[in-house]
Length: 436
Image (cartoon, rainbow, N blue to C red):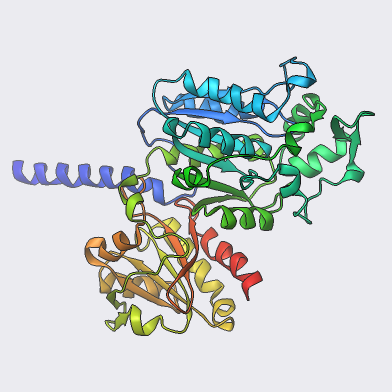
C-alpha cells in the first residue's frame, strides 16, 4: 500500500511539473510566471512621445525583478531643455549616461526614432550592450539620417499634409491631434490610452531627424539584435520595417499585431517578448546561420519513415524549413495549421514546406494525421540539425524559428517568434510576396 501511495505521489508531482513547464507553450501570452535572471532594461521613446509610454511595460518588467530605466529625451515630456539642446548627439549622450550608471550590461530598447538613437548609442559603447531591441524602430545605415530613410516608406500615414510646422521650420506637430494621433499612432488603443498620447503631445524637434548617423558597421554587425514588428503600423509600415530589418541583417524577429505604439495598447505583449529575451539560451549564437549562409547538409527520416536528404530534396527548389518545440502543444499546433492553411499559396509559388523537431517518427505521424498536414515533418533525434542551424532554445525548450532557403541552399530570410507560432506562415508569405 505504501509503495502504491508513493507511486501515485510521484505521478501527481510529475503531472504538476509538466503542467507548469508546458503552460508557457500552450498560449501565445504565456511566460508570465517564468522566473528569469534580473536584467537592466533601458527604454528609449520615439518622436512625439515621451517616457511615460513605457509605464505599463516598465511595471511588469519590474514585477519580475528587472531594473528598468525609461529615458526622457531633451525637449520631450517633462524635460524643459531648450530646443537647441535637442540634438541627436545630446540624445545619444543622455542614453549613454543612463547606461554607464549601470553596473554591467543592459538590454537597450528603442521605438521608432528611438531606433536610430539606440543604433548610434550601442555602436559607441558596445561593451555595455547585452541585447539591442527595436520596436518598430528606424535602423539607419551609417551615413544616413532618419529623414532620408523615412522618405522611402511610401505607405506611411505621416505626410506633410497632416503636420503643422513651426514658422521657423524647427519643429512639427500634428494637425487635429484628436483624430490623427489615434489614427496614426494607436488605432488599436482605448480612448483613455489615446487621450494620454494626445495630452502629452509636444512639437517634435526636427534637427535630429536630419542628422546622419556615423558608426562602425563592423561594430553594429557584432551586436546581438532583435526586432519587434508592429504588423498594423500606419506610421512605419510593416513592409518598410521588413525592408530595414533585411538590409540591417537583423535575423531575430518577433511580431505584434498592433499599431505603432504596442507598449501603450498591448503592453502585455511587449512585456512578454522583452521578458522572454532574458530566458533565451545564447549558446547557439556563435553557430547560428545568418542570411547569406549556406545550410548544412543533413539527412533525416520523415513522418512516413522516408529519408529526406537536403542535398537532393532541396536542390533547385525554394524551401521553408521551420523548427518547432513539440508536437501537439498549443502554439506548435497553431503554427502547423497556419502552414497547412497557407499550403496552396506556397505550392503555387513552387515552394516546399518542411517542419523539424526532435520527436520520433510515430509522434510526427500522429501529429500530421490528426491535423491533416500536407507537408513533411522530419525527426531530428538529439537536435543535431537544430544545433547545426543555430536555433536558440527558449524557456528550457527547443526554439521556434523559420528559415527561407533558396534553390541553391542559401538562407535568404529568417524569422523567430517563440510565442506566436501562427505568425510564422504569414510572415514568410509577406517576405516572399515581393520576391514572387
